[in-house]
Length: 243
Image (cartoon, rainbow, N blue to C red; front, side, top):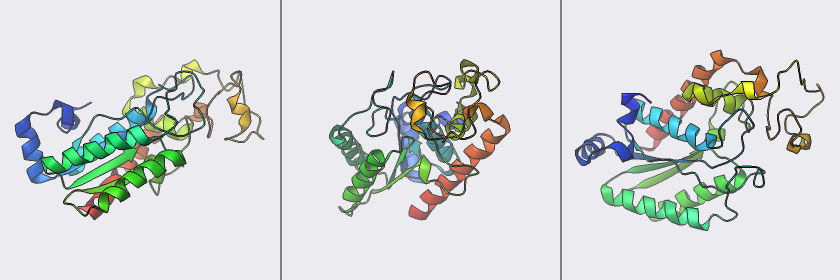
């Protein structure tokens, strides 16, 4: 993480630094993710790592602060997978988010961005509900909820541990992308008829077990930075529309 990005990390800032940011650009980013299986080649905290990384780069470009990422979430089809911790109900998470918004309002922030790297419908419904209910209060702080899968104009679409998430994390933390942990394409090619989101990938013996999307073994590192830049530019544009 560069010094420029660290200058926007809420937990690292001194009070005088926070006052200076508030006076210039009163935006707080709340990254959300989860602990979830992302294949043998990616870390279980990927969703939080990507949401936090995108938010930090957005703040570095457009101002504001970024809170530490949430690692608890709801929804998705990987609840029983190894090293996955996903809640069955959103109530506790919503309560925490609402309390965070209350405190951010007290501090003088004008916009809170709930940005999720974990994007099953249940998670998206939760952040949308939190933002909508908060905005009904018509207070000085406004809430905006969105997620990685809502970013428009990308060269390829979101997936779970496939080409998209592998490429995005490679732009942020290339040291955490370990394609060498997967069997090679020569050793274990997939049949051309296989659906990227087929049930067969729930089989622990599948060469890309738990991956739902295009085969990450076709990853092209040249696509990493352009993908991240497109995500950041889109989020900057959305935030500027709202503050």
